[in-house]
Image (cartoon, rainbow, N blue to C red; front, side, top):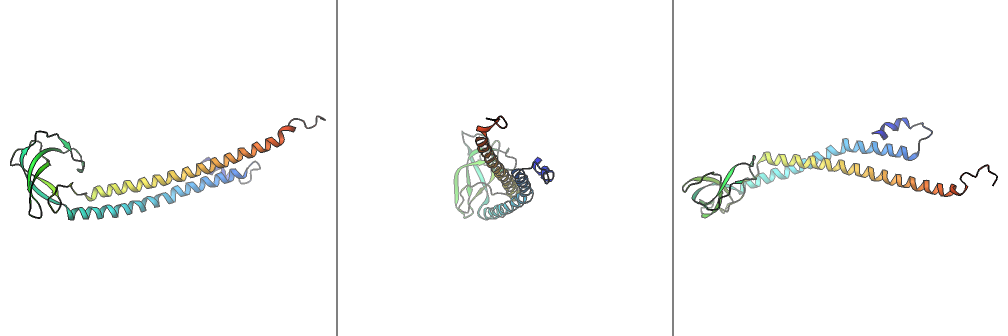
Length: 201
């Protein structure tokens, strides 16, 4: 920001170096890119992610089915688990041996996770399966898809801003290195005669 504010002050300053002006213009260009281009990239990435995720939501809703299963018995090893697909992630689940009818009419009997704290034989619970009756995770919901798309857009915007700033810093670093190299060359040329002017030597 100091370089940008100095852009106006350095217009007619006799001590102004060309690199000072270039650095100020570079800072201004980087600021404009961050303010104008970064939001556009974030919106585009977010919109693309939203379309892809909402299509995934539709596909999962078509291919996954909610069926009612019956508890045959509670398994000895029945740790309480948090379902990562739920909105709160705190629903207690128990491991049971269950029986259910698949959407295609086939009967299945296998281990499943029931959203029951204390399951008993004969208890009913709902779970998600594919069209063949195989247990699958619950389908992605629209709200979660939108949240993921927003996070993708924000991440893309922040990444773009970081790349712009990193590019600006890299260019300034190279300019400073070149400036120091020129100073070293000038000092090497003036070094042998430094302080000898007017001594008569």
